[in-house]
Image (cartoon, rainbow, N blue to C red):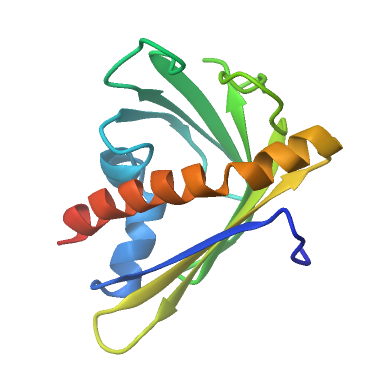
Length: 169
C-alpha cells in the first residue's frame, strides 16, 4: 500500500530477538499482556492467525468516566502473515461478536484502517518494529480526523510499547 499524507507510522527498537517479538504480537496470551492503551486490561477472545482470520479483543479501561468508555472491542482481520517479518491486517472497532461498529469516541473516524507491522533484526538480540496505519475508504472528515489524531496515536502506541518492553524484558 503506497504511503499517503494520512498515514501514521511509529518505530521502536526492542532489545529482544525477532522470534520473541513476533510471538508477543501473534500469541494471544502474550498480546493480551501489552496490547492497548497503557493501563488497560486486554482480553483476546478470538485469534485466528491466518489470512482472512480474525483477532477479536476487548480492552477494559481503568476509568469509564468522561470521554472514555469502560470497554472497547476491536478486531483485526489478517491479510498477510509472513513469520517472523511482517503482519498486515484491517483493523476496526467492533462489538462482542466481531461486527464492525463506529468509533466509541465522538467525532468522525474511519470504520476501518489498514495496519502493517514489520520486524527487522538489528544486531544480536534486537528487533526494530515499524507500525504503519492508514485509513481505508474514509471520507474527507474521517481522513482529517485520522491525521489530527497522530499525536494521540503516538502517545497510545508509545505507552503500549513501554509495556511490551516490560513483557519482553
